[in-house]
Length: 178
Image 1 (cartoon, rainbow, N blue to C red):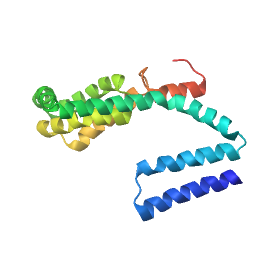
Image 2 (cartoon, rainbow, N blue to C red):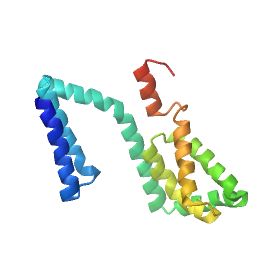
Image 3 (cartoon, one colour):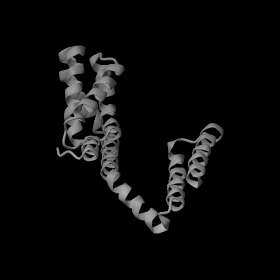
Image 4 (cartoon, one colour):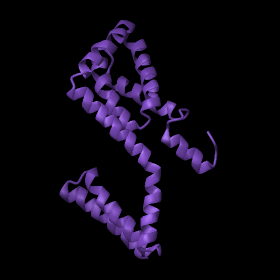
């Protein structure tokens, strides 16, 4: 019963924060952390068991967090180093010459290849979309098509690439080897 109270109370705090105080995603973390600690303690794990369980859970997401951080750093280096304009120009020439239809297919293929190296969707979006948006504008491709090419390039390849954390999570849950 105590865990049910912690669960509903925690989400009540989040709802209140969103509606009345304008909270965003960054404010949810401390509430979820407090909920996890209280749930572990009230669930009979104690403080040490809760800490061990928390660290074990973090093992599964540490790789993804590292990839997202690296991708964000790449995006900052490209923007602040004023390299991104050169890359956009170099990538846009073949896409403009190919036309909007083949250009959108080229965007899909390039996102699929990039997904091998940056498998986290948020990190890939932070790295790729600042490039793809101006390329789409220059090539006469709608931004919606560019986003769709990104989503397909990310989503389809996540079913087969060896760097996909979601694929390995699903395979691990099923007890299958890659």
